[in-house]
Amino acid sequence: MIWYTVLVLATGAERIAELVVSSRNARWSFARGGVEYGRRHFPPMVALHTGLLLACLAEVWLLDRPFLPWLGWPMLVLVVASQALRWWCIATLGPRWNTRVIVVPGLPLVARGPYRWLHHPNYVAVVVEGFALPLVHTAWITAAVFTVLNAVLLLAFRIPCENRALATSEATAARA
Image (cartoon, rainbow, N blue to C red):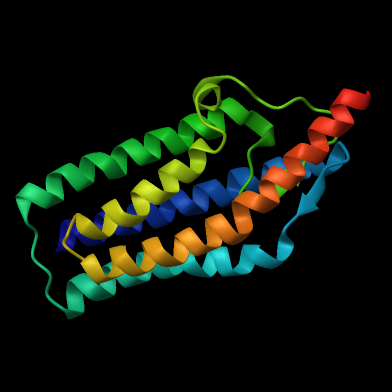
């Protein structure tokens, strides 16, 4: 269980690194006239992702969840793959990547990297990590609850907000 705790803490450290990059990128975007959308759904999103990490540890430690190699190793591969996809997204978008929805008017949509194939590849990483990280150590309650809550947040709020924001940006770019 100790190594799993280290994995979850490392994931938390990675989240802090994301917030540092996001903060820097937000300053870049706002300096170029960036407009933020969907501020109201951001705090629940932060709470959900923080809760994921805490629930992973709580379920494994308090309910004495076992490590099952046939499940744990493939899930660990998915966790690593989701991190690789997330950082590919961050590298592809460069200063335009953010944990918030901030759009710089007039900039064209990015159509390279993982965005060649998917509109929202970062959310694929979030979804995969959301079920895989808990299941590395059979925290199936956490995996199920996070997956459902994350689906509601993404499908009802975040993705529609982002699509509206990007559509506004595309319309602005087309007029320019």
